[in-house]
Image (tube, rainbow, N blue to C red; front, side):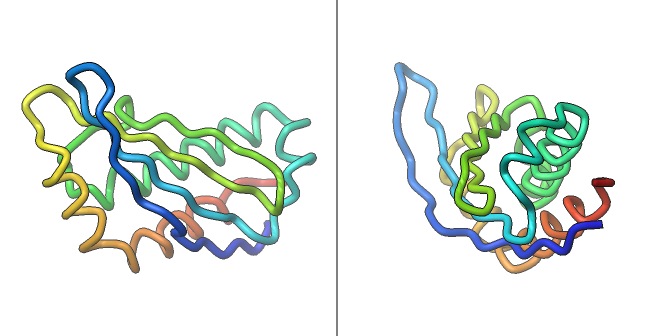
Length: 117
């Protein structure tokens, strides 16, 4: 199991057409990007772990299908884009995630640690 530390680095909002989105950046340390990219099963499990933690941090204001996750090199950089469902205000999503930011970091780290590899 890889020891992973998660740090939230940026939060921004953007408006695309009529759907608002929130972009969240974080870095997973102790996890090799090339290893992750070369193992699709591991990559999908890490992606799911990140999504699950973000949804949990959002206190049920959006589902896993509303979260898109991309990885890039430099330890493993994560960009998660959250598109709240229709009728959910971005402000409430951002507030819930801000409120749970400490727990969110630990939750993401714990979920990623559970991925074999």
